[in-house]
Length: 230
Ligand code: ADP
Ligand code: ADP
Image 1: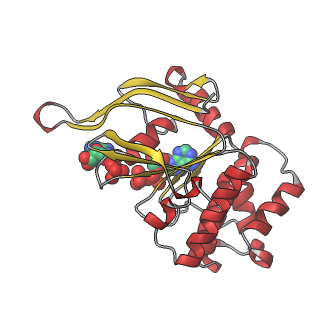
Image 2: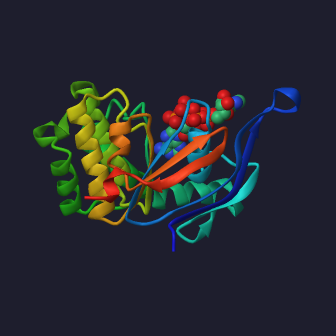
């Protein structure tokens, strides 16, 4: 069964003549072991879809089930708990805490949840993102690519069932982009997670198994992408 099942999602901003339909009856499933790229023109509803599915925003209509839990029924407290326990987020602006070291940032979701990190897993994460001895540096002492890798490692730290990434390679050079995409691929292929990324970058999309294209709040294409064949 899919890890994420979204059905009949609609969302309108504003009302009356100025109302904007950001999502128009969208239904989509995401499976474990699948890397999905969402593309589409600016304003087509990509962020709104991701935020509604990830429980960061509420749709006006429709249902979302994550790992068997229908989030549309949850109150804010339980929704926050579910996000914390089962969902990883990678945002374009990194959202790293400047006063914490790279390693402390990676561990933050576990710290907040009061869970002890598995030392082997932490070691594997830090090694995979190639931080080396910079693990004890603060974000301001890291390059943009390194900061983004820390943000991705943080999203993967609690081994969430599903990871949502908003432009994970935005503003990165091609080497850093490939490292991020490799890390996301690894979490899908090695750990069986489901990763959903919004991207404008065709190169990033070529790493995906599946490509969704949104237009005017609807899915206008859903099919295999580059990563599926090799
Ligand atoms: P994308 O991520 O594809 O650029 P968005 O989901 O951000 O698209 O936006 C979809 C539509 O909803 C756009 O027309 C956008 O202007 C509108 N929209 C998004 N967020 C808001 C908001 N908070 N208030 C009003 N309109 C919004
Ligand atoms: P924007 O809406 O400007 O594109 P983001 O995509 O970074 O901003 O964040 C979208 C929403 O998610 C914001 O309301 C933000 O407060 C919230 N948010 C950011 N990080 C987290 C997080 N780790 N967990 C839950 N919500 C978050």
